[in-house]
Amino acid sequence: MCTQYLNTNVAFFKNITKNNNDITAFSDPFDCLIADCGSKTVSINNFNIVTYINLLESNNKKAENILDKREKLQVRIRLTKCTKNENERLSVDLDEFEIDTSKSNDIVKDACVPYLNFTRITHIDTINLDIENPKGSYVIKVIVKTPKDEKYTVQSMHHLKIE
Image 1 (cartoon, one colour):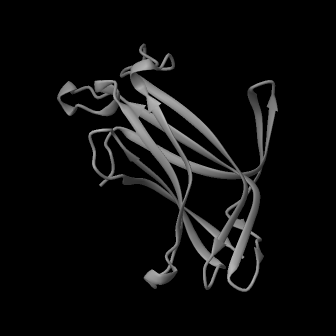
Image 2 (cartoon, one colour; image 1 turned 90 degrees about the vertical axis):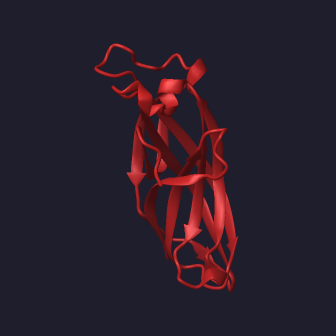
């Protein structure tokens, strides 16, 4: 089940241009990677995952969402092989981070409801996957939880093909 008042999405780019610490351009977007595939391994090199997270307060304070309560949001970016064969359903966490809404200076409070936009860039130098059939369909999942939650829940998924 998804977390209410929370939108997440990802995009894949080969290059990101910065001027000092400011991002000036995302270039070479893709949804398919050509990978170096050995007999049972795949090596994926040099790309960026851009994660967009938008948190909204609710008009109804009884909703008790993350931004209403100024809680922490724990986030993981997970790569998972799409297959019905559970022996091949490999999952690898590519990034893990936390958004502490109680300490954020980026909450916009003068809109119809307060909100927080957050962008995270995860640079991937190399991923080596050791599986029987490395080529095919994968999914990048954004999974989230608050400190009181026992388990992460899938908030969004984005397809990535590896050839």
